[in-house]
Length: 113
Image 1 (tube, rainbow, N blue to C red):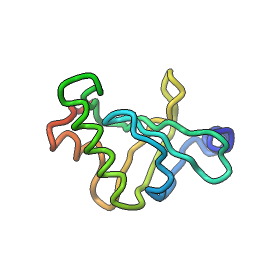
Image 2 (cartoon, rainbow, N blue to C red):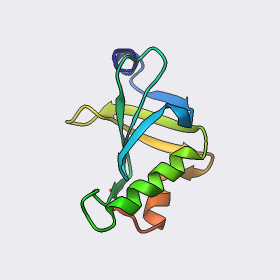
Image 3 (spheres, rainbow, N blue to C red):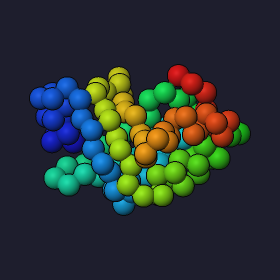
Image 4 (cartoon, helix red, strand yellow):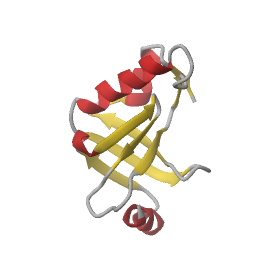
């Protein structure tokens, strides 16, 4: 976390290709944790552009399962420029021309934010 925090402070924005194996857990449809080389703690990421159903809502488990499946398909890009009030990285998550936010909205598991 310290390394990523320092990088964000130095370059303002960070773009990483993330192997799906680095995803440690998916908390809900729009928040997941990952481990990066040299970072001692889990880094939480909040997906920009979507507000997915909360895990306790009726569509919450489906939104979480969709995100688990989407992230597990292989490496993806994470572009993050700031943190939210909870300390999570706010970022765009994409693979090629697909983005997780747009795909969650298309699957009716979230709304544009």
